[in-house]
Length: 254
Image (cartoon, rainbow, N blue to C red; front, side, top):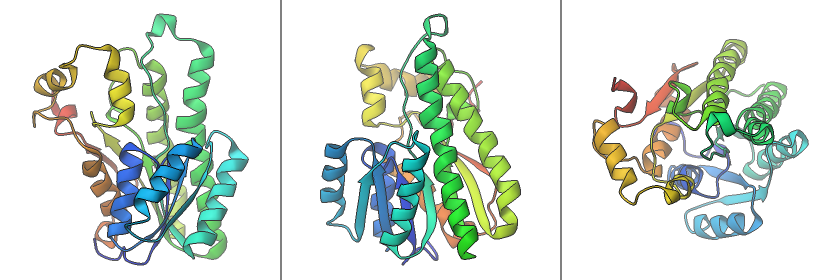
């Protein structure tokens, strides 16, 4: 991608799935990358794997803790030299019917998926504005932000909030040269989705693809990593406040 080489990148939730693929893609583009993850063992494994690809470092961080999010952004800026790209990727999900949805579970989803995204984004934006530095912040939403999927009221709501957060940030941060966009992946083959599908019939993923995805396959993390790279690059220099679905046509289906 044009203009990515040498840039400093933070990938929150960069230890598995889409985040890990995004970190790898940014390294392949010649970026200096800093990742965060909630689990120490997963972080160590990701750093070992990615260390063969380029300049990588990272730290354990629970983005639902505002101070931890701020500290991670500041550490990333110091580690990569000058942070200009944030792949705001950390998130969690699980199935839970609306009628049985526990308030504590609602609060946890919101704390990570929405407040955590706000905390990372605000800390990064404040850093960029203080430094007088342009940049790109890419928030992880979902096709679940564009329509309601059964058993995911908490997740759907959190991702809908991410879209409005993205639009609000775009309006306020554009004058500073900070581009803000959101990605809406559809069904992607990640460890998280594999865990969620674990209690469903073994052919669930392929049946879902056949019934709901015109390309007749589920996505892979590299599909979404490519979208991260595009939105961070100079190829997307006039893309701002946008919502990019990476879903094989899933939201086009009536």
